[in-house]
Amino acid sequence: HENPSDESALPIKALAHLHAQQFDEAIASFEKITDNEAKKRNLIPQATAYNAAKKPAKVVGLLKPYWEASPNNPDQIKIADQLLWAYSQSGNAAEANKVIEKLQSTWAKNSEALSAIAHYRKQQGKNEEAIGLYSEALAYASGPSRDFVALELADIFYRRNDFSKAAELYESTADLKTDNELSRRYLVCLYNSGLHKEALELARTFRGAGEPVPVVGQIEANILAEIGDLKTAQQIMERLTQLHPKLHAYRIAAAEFAMRRERLDETRVLLEQI
Picture: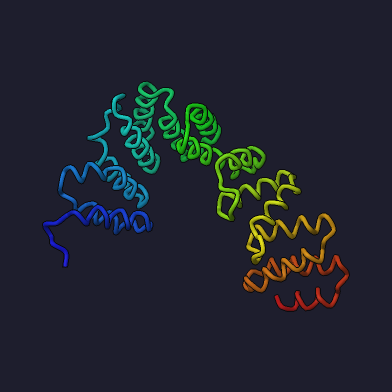
């Protein structure tokens, strides 16, 4: 049984729930903390939980008393970022603009401040402004901060199908030696930018001697078909069909490759399984 007077476990529990995206449970634990120092240490995680749970008024109530835009305290930028997220959710442009004005006057060339404003513009759907701000932030950023900004910028380019620009940014930040979400995005960017030789090499690197995986295997098969290796392309798609029997797109692709090889019996068998 927990000792009601012992709060030491509460922040740990709250952060564990937050990491697991269990926002309501995280909030419940954060709100049980009464020690003032512990409260201050967990301001940003608690605000993150409120924002993620779509409780912007709670964020404002929690953080506004601490928002000063003091040049001697860069942690204020994190508070501003959370406030802007909250004001974006509540549609309070007037208060958001006050925060932005303070950020611009106090930290004009700070990459995190520029990123906070860019994130707000992105949430508003003002992607051109966001791109300009993230690009400026990239010029001032270094280390992990630079990777964060680059990935935010890459995400915008990726979502608007500007694959060549996204590829440049993913190439400089993603782990391209393993199959992961970012390296897959880089692979998609290469393929859609017409860099098929590079895409094929990367897809083969990801697969190694293992089984084909979604996205990576599809791209590998498509490129192999383009260069005339329809047999291997069909084999990859058939294996994906076996691994993911409910996804009929793989079976249809395998049937298409079989048809192009004039293997009509194989085509018929594949299509009959749909």
